[in-house]
Length: 175
Image 1 (cartoon, one colour):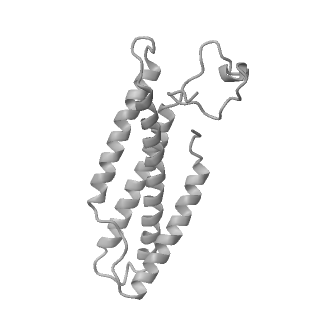
Image 2 (tube, rainbow, N blue to C red):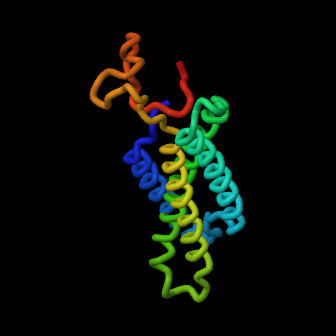
Image 3 (tube, rainbow, N blue to C red):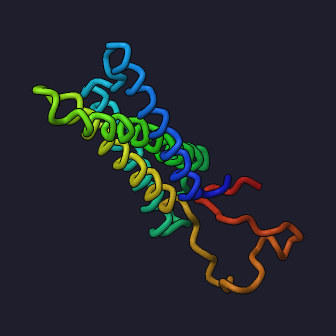
C-alpha cells in the first residue's frame, strides 16, 4: 500500500469544494435547503477520529517498544493503516464540500439575519480538517523504521532478495 500523496488530497479537496460551491449556488437559486450536513455529523467524525488515534497509538507503542516481547497482530496494523487513509480521504471530501458551501455563504453574510448555516459549514469543514490531520499522523505511526543494520542509502532487505523496495513500508509486511 502506498502512502497518501498530500497533493492528491489537495486536488480532491479543491474539486469537491468547487462541487459544494456549485451545489449551493443551485440550491439557493431554486430556493432549496443548503446541502450541509447536520451538526450531529461532528459526533460521528469525532468517534472516527478517536478510534483512529487509539489504534494508531497502539501501533506506535509497538513500533517504538520492544518488538520481541509481544507481537503486533498484522491484521490490526493493516486495518489501522486503512482506517487512517480512509479518515484522511473522508476528511478531505468533508472539508472541501463544506469549505465550498462556506465560501458561497460568505457572499450572503450581510443579507441574512440567520448565519447558522455558515457557522455549521465552518464547523464541519474544521472537523474534516481534523480528520485529514489525524489520518496523516496515524499513517506515519504505521511506518516501520529502518532495521538496525540497514543504511538509508543502501539496498534494503527486500532489494537484497531481488525485490524492489517499495516507496513506504508499514507496520505490517505484505510479502
